[in-house]
Length: 367
Image (cartoon, rainbow, N blue to C red; front, side):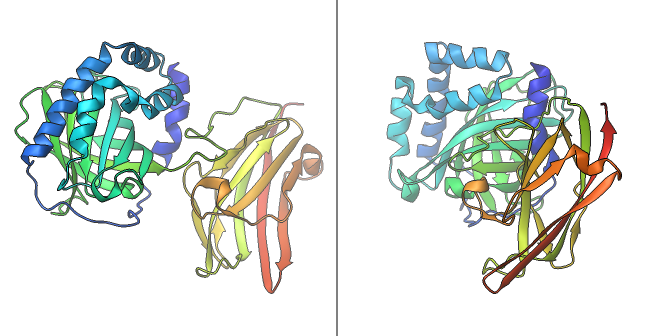
């Protein structure tokens, strides 16, 4: 189970140092809690304790014990359907709330990822975003002073931004917001040294000696699920041959009407695999004319590989522009007399000329 958890979390740690600003930023007016906000967090704490002893709560704890991250995500989707959260939902409908989102997330402190915590959760629109906005998210935190004693806690958050705009870097600092020793509260800032506040959180299930004082966080926001699902695959079964996609060169980008560069990612499928792998797993590489991306992606395969190149417009392959007019098809026989081969994308689309080169190298052949 631990190996699968590592595979599921790997793409998020892979892109931890990629800085992206949220689409729209608004900021909280103060670093204290109003009476209503205290009431919300206190009720959330009470409801969570009741949820844990319910049938649904027991199912969630089992998924946690199995390190089943996709299962945890599916369970969280319906968590607010539980009757124990009815009072909390009423409180969140109060007018005048200084927030655009309310979130619930599970904190997973994985001891085999030294210094990292992961929060997987659900954010709902409140205030002006009530009923019109929600998202799933996953936050990766680089933590100072982490202990390995607590593997799971729950985090509730009130955020200034709408759910879709919660992504990017932030810095959470532990502050006493008057909720007592059983609830650890944090103020979340735009960046280290900034006074701009994105939100406040309350964490339950983390003892005082197990908590953290400061945490750098990167949040991935997911809208509707695309072909790859919430957790895209990273682990590949070993096959007969190992190939490296050495580089992708942009000779002339596709004109998407928004500038002179493409935000490139690609998908690949080996042999009879149905659902594709993505690279980067949750990101893209901005490429202009003449740029070369030394991507170095390894692919296990037996006979064939199929690759599609995309210009990222958000939400995976569904809403992105496809760059490959036809898929790049790689066959093991392509390397019979040479270890490397260049595959070309070169075609016209109206007045637009799209041209890329993909260099692949066969580095292991077990047949």
